[in-house]
Length: 226
Length: 226
Image (cartoon, rainbow over all chains, first blue to last red; front, side, top):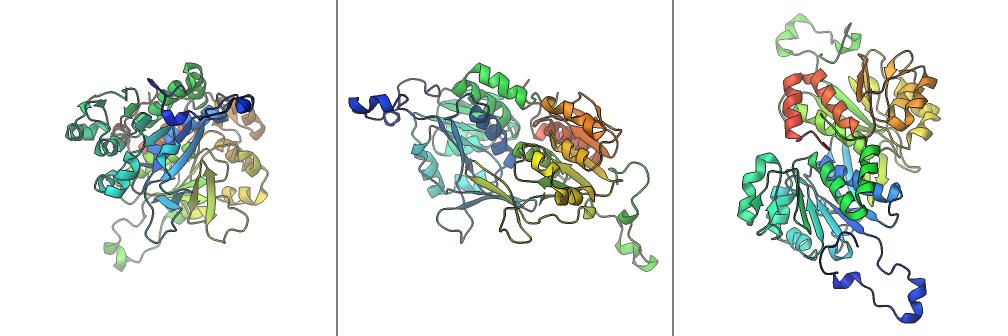
């Protein structure tokens, strides 16, 4: 459980009887990462960290680490399960699961985008996000941090967001940090849009180590825009 | 038509009668950009340049410039029009249009990914891509350049791809270039995965100028991974 600092979450430990131990060499399953998608998100905010994080498994560093895109919003008239979570440029991204219980994940990543404004005022959406256990690792890209603020995750913590929105952070009790990635333990926020790539690599290092980070960064052919 | 170097494509010019000229202050419509999506693409290869290019309009540099994600592949059993073009991590990207005529676009961007292997052997897919007029601007990210090679676009030109695949380029008659973005006029290739962000910004500069590039790069909060 490299993503946990401090005490181990109670529900991360399964109770096993002694007779079955041999069949459970690794009783705690691989790290389960959720990426929260919603209408009006900036697609790159989600796809940047997804690309980096999904390589923990695909490049063999830990095949048990899984990524899942889950829907925080859906279109009116959609079925109960599926969510249409992004639509633009003649294309549409859909997630299989609409608001699955976040307690079944170890890490939650929240992207930003203009859609965060509506979600900040959506009590049901915030209740869903806020139910993610406070002792687990939550991360944001760009204005995704405003949603974390709206569920009380930033209170008294250092945090960042898109440069143009830093002034929004104090109303959530956050201490503004003008840094690319701000690691406060079980809370990691990052700057605008492409900072999601740095966030992804930072989380790779936390979850799978510095060697994985270096190899994944090389495979993704970073850095960008120098 | 800042994306055209050399002679103006015949079909970029509409015939107008003199009486109607006043109503056609800009007889040539805005730049139409297609981003080609397919099963087995690396999603970030498409989303990186899409983010940069879509900001030409959304940030007001040229509201007539449009981006469209078009499907090069679809699932068996899909309807004639729609394409399911990417699926992974409990999510699915769909495009409204499956193989629309590429001649209706000014710029085509081809991402890479493991799916290029199958497409290199798919005569119908290549015929569709190869029908994009040779005098217009075509660009690739990562192994997308292998598809451009398969339709003869790289012959005698400098080109690049993901670092691990550079040795594939000579079989298409290309001259290998170990650079992040290789601009050969109406052919622009770029390196692996995140090089698509650099490609996007390079095309922004070509299509909308250096000022647009600088502002869009700042809004996206580049650079990444320093």
